[in-house]
Each structure stands twice: as structure tokens, then as C-alpha cells.
Length: 300
Image (tube, rainbow, N blue to C red; front, side, top):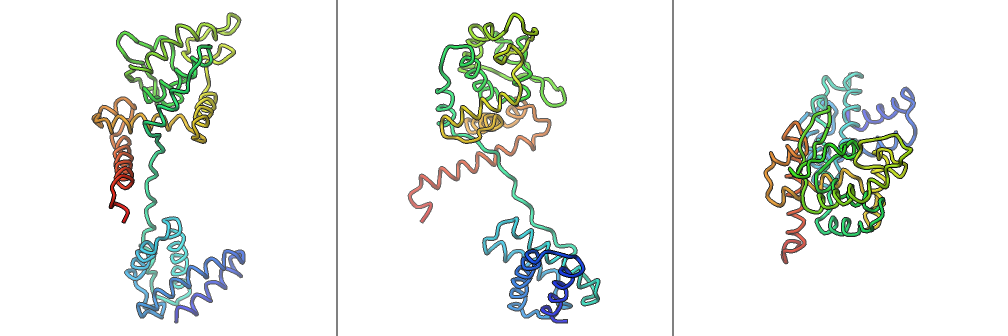
């Protein structure tokens, strides 16, 4: 059977038996028309003559034409349905698309701030009232120690070993680790504990050992931390800044500064080095961006 006739049968099946909407059928028809055009250029006009290699070549052609992975995924999914239908109806003896893999979705790299953005963010955290001291310490610790939101919320005063230069952190799965603290993060946290936390700890509130307190004297929640970080980000023009972005930035900047990947893994509390290796991709991407923006002939 010629491919055009087989496609007409398939579209009819979608409309009548499957009850697909006109818009869905139209989208399938468009994708299959593109497929037919590609096969015609290769001299293939009959369904039974389509081989797996032709479908793989078509997938590669879509990629070369600049289609997004999500669009290629949709095209190949349509072909799989079409060829499955053809085999079931006896238009072809086998399904050449059965073992064709859908394109792998590219790994989404985490968002990171530049060092300049981090400096701008933290330098704006001023004020000597308890809330201002707390918020400055909070952001400094999130970035300076690479903590997760839950780890920051769960941090207790007894976890702070300032003389040794570390925080005792309880991470995922209740696993404990040591997070180094120094520089402005240490300075901000000590300043808050000495001059801010005591004023937030209300006499009539339930006693808590939490480092970061809310205005009522209770432990600062993860939701509240999200709001504080988002508000601070908006102040420097970064919309919807997420606390995890500060953690990603911490790791990326450590790697760019020459820190060993295994050390970063230990500080972040990753059980598998492969999780930490994402930052090598982030750093590589940053290097490429810097190269393209700075080299006079990189974009000719």
C-alpha cells in the first residue's frame, strides 16, 4: 500500500474509532505529511518498504533542521503509532519504528547566579534590626555553606561550632555532615545570634533551639525562607529566586575557584559523585559563554 493511502486510513481511525479531536488529527496529519516528504526524497513510497534506518535518518534530519527535542519526540511518537496501526491492519509485515528510541531530553542545568549577582544580592542585605540581621545571615549561610532550605530551617544553635569553623547539618535521610563556614557567612551568623536572635525569641513563645526564628519566636519555616530569598532576588532584578539557586551557585563558584569535585560532593552531602558532576557541565557552559562574549572572532 502506498504511504498516502495508509495515512488516510490511520487518520480516519483516529477520527472515528479513537474519537480524537479535529485539532489532534490535524497535528498528526501535518507531522505525517512531513514524514512522507522525507521518504519521497529517499525514493520510498510504499509502507512495506519503510525500514528502521529510514526512521532513524528522519529523526536525525529533524535534529539538523533545528527542531526542539520535545518536537522530535512528538514526531517520532506519531510515527510509532502510525506504524503500529499499519502492522495491525496488515499494510506491512512488521513495525520498523518499534525499536526506534525517542530522543533523550537534554539534562537541564541548574540555574546559577554570577559572582557579581551574588555580591549585589548580599551587599544589599543591610540594617541592624533583628529581622534584617536574620535575613542577611540566612542568605549568607545559604550561599556561603551551600545548605538546602530544609537544612537551614532545621539548623539549631547547638549545631554551630564557630571556633572549629563548621556547622553540623542534618541532610536528606537524616544523614549528618559538616559544612564549613567562614568569611562573611560566619560574620553575619555570629552578628545575628549575638544581636538579633535574642530579640526574636519571645518570652511567651514555646522555647526552641532553632537558629533562624520568625517574628513570633518560632522556627522559620521553609516557606518563609523561600519568600525571603525571592524578595531579596527581586530587589536586584532576579525574579523568583529560589534558595536552591544559591546552593547551585555555591557549588559552581567553588568548582570555578579550583575546589576538588570530591570535596564539593562532601560539603553538599551528595551520596553519589554523579550528582555533583552536573556542576562540571554548568562550569563548562559558563566558560563557553564567557569565551563567546569576549573573543573578537567567536561569533563571526
